[in-house]
Length: 215
Image: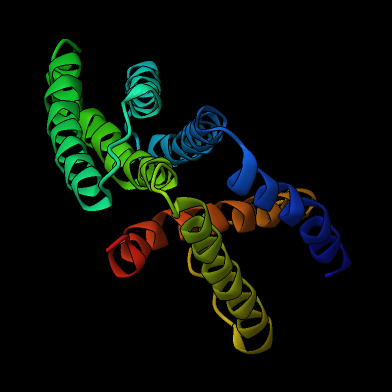
């Protein structure tokens, strides 16, 4: 509990400063870093199911996606900018499917191609696209304040989930993923809590952008 509070006291002002004052390029780099870390963790989980993902192809594709987001010109009209971003994201998702499947089909044996491509496509659409939408939202004239609102909603939900889980939670969501050796349990739980928070951000981004986007 004390560690969580101390971490929040130190990191929350830094995050708010970056969201409100940092240049768009810095926000894009931070979002890309979070996306790459989350995707790396997801691909590790995929390997546990016997799938050999396209690691470097996924990383390169995600990096190019965020570079295009940062260097793309900002439209002064919020609705038009959001519409263009939606079309761009849909096109990127379609291109990702074709790209990863084309790379995976060069593998042998061929029956491993589809699971590998599917894992990379899911990682891009479920992690990189929502975090990319945060960069696009930051480009709006009031985007920084919308991102602050988004972070407050996610933090409030995370705090509520923590206290509810501590008080009434009795069953693990994924007991098979918990290591059996006691020495690694605490590290695993802390790492699991961190990535659950990141997953919360990625899941809340699309809904928050839909309900509180620019009008």
